[in-house]
Image (cartoon, rainbow, N blue to C red):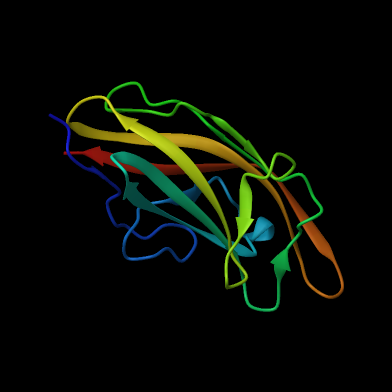
Length: 146
């Protein structure tokens, strides 16, 4: 019986929480990211969600009017996501009490094991002078089912 869905810690390109192994791939120095990502699991009423946080750097804010999108590639070994596409337009990106936004990703453990989930993120990060769009930023995070 599958009991727990976990994310394992590891630092990545951006500063990431101790509780996660989310990372951003293929970002050059000239394309320095103005945000960080973090993923955490949350279990409620026998269902598991991955909370995917996007936090702009100090002095920047989330471009709330932009139709941000998160697209996941479904797991093949240990986890399945009933929903793979999330967008700001459909209300999937929720502001938090800080400057972060969070996307709640429902997850279903299939069997015990570890798997790396990949996807892409499109978003807009702004300061008082300019806004910077990010398109097809590759993300990944490992999921462990125990």
